Image (cartoon, rainbow, N blue to C red; front, side):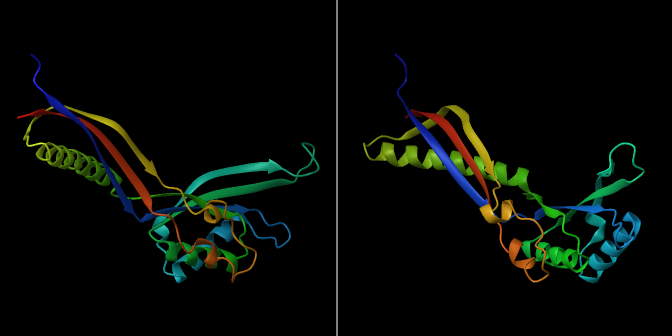
Length: 204
């Protein structure tokens, strides 16, 4: 005869503010102001440093050259250079956009958000989900005068991560005015880490 058991699904949800915010910045050759990509890059680094931003987190993401409107026979080649900058808070992101607005750099947006301790947080969520399952199984059996025995099955049913920014922020690009830029990135939704564990426990 099979030993009696109880089946329980434990769940856990952990929320944490992102501490890795990645800003994508694109510099384009400015023919009107006769400002080269290198000159713009130097100005960008100077402004970021003066705003207290760690420029060690500024990396080149891509470089390209495209022919101008007059087509392939034209000698006009528009060069671009794309950077990705990591900052640790929404407040610092606002300062970055403030600096970009000062330099009239309009092609910038939030690429993604993340957390430096994400793997640990996922582990913690799984542990809490198992504890939740055990707690539920214990009080349900106590309600009918039974005791919880050893687990005979533990299976992760589902886990997920949601890192959505607020709708307005997800579609945000650098505003044309210096005053509008900081408000555009003032807040992000917390990263949601979800865990769901299926368990089966013997009834002692």
